[in-house]
Image 1 (cartoon, one colour):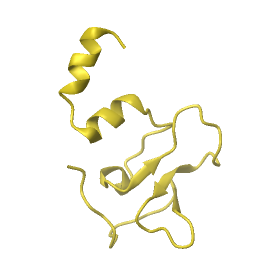
Image 2 (cartoon, rainbow, N blue to C red):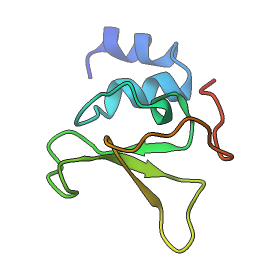
Image 3 (cartoon, one colour):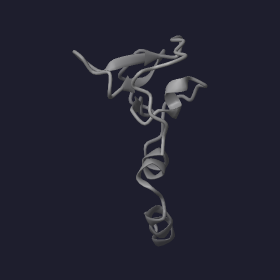
Length: 83
């Protein structure tokens, strides 16, 4: 990182910093993108199936709940808005 980028990065809160550094593979209008528990698929990771946008870190039994871009979620008990 250049010096100017480091100064700018120090001004960001943790959520914004991670959003800037860790780029998501795809963006959709899915409700989970507004939740702080979404762990999105990183760009060029190539691991999960193409329709998965990420995993919920709160709904985790027995594994993280994978979220497809085809899922229609209107309300979720685990939802917490990003800070």
